[in-house]
Length: 383
Image 1 (cartoon, helix red, strand yellow):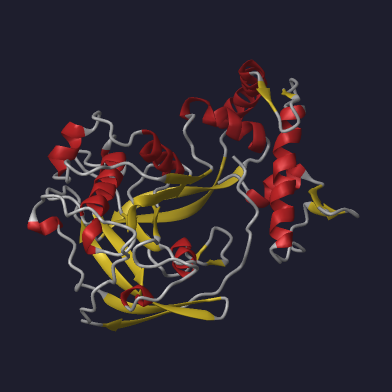
Image 2 (spheres, one colour):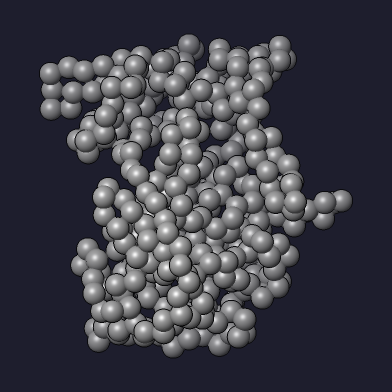
């Protein structure tokens, strides 16, 4: 599915330093944290095992405590991935507030870096280069600046394992993320943030996992796998809310949707996944569709309208969303409508949109609109 137009371009830097302060977190009398769940000592949160770091965003700095590579299961099969990073603003250890939040009221932002159902390390507060080469500010840093506690768990994925022993096959990824949630719930009394206010976040396959976290809280379906991993199974694994971007859940029809958009674009960059020094190495390689793949692309695109028309969808104005045999119609108009809203939201947040040639302007309270949908798709590129 098309990605949202970027809302902002933020700068960010980090400075590391070791610290061993043991200042206790002040407790808010209006919020009673539950007692720590019985669990192995190896899965008990250690409030003294951290580094201090400073993040800077939009000219403002924030000191945080970074608790890195914390194991959240007792029996990991991939210990490099089955760990979590937790970041807590330093002011919460001195009784101060951010955005009205205190150590006891701050929600916990729980982003994952899962993509393509491949393994993912815990997300960090460092900036990173996006697909277009531009530096992206970490969502971890953004959430911290707004007063959230941030906990990001790594997770196993489909490329892990050898010789038929695929340690990352389903349901490993959701088992790992649920195990991390249980860890946060079980250790709630020992750390800042409200474990009853965990917001799961992810994009694409990571978005699908966030949705599954929201839908499967407290489910017994994963108990055997959770026990096998050594998760804290007597702790709640439900989340308070989900923030999912482009969650890829309808896998059986995703190829049709993709070719409806990118049919006719033959060149692309494919992701090559390999191992280097026991770490997953991802590299983008230029490639082109083969003649056989072009035939498949045409067939998938031609099948998409009947699929959409069979869903009986309605748009924002109540109009039926349909496509004709060429892939045009009110469904496409609805997609463009939401893209226009995204562009104007970005504009109102002071984002410079002049670099996007597919956008045009008119005299309106919402001046920007997608004048060239094919140009928008070309900007995204077949990836």
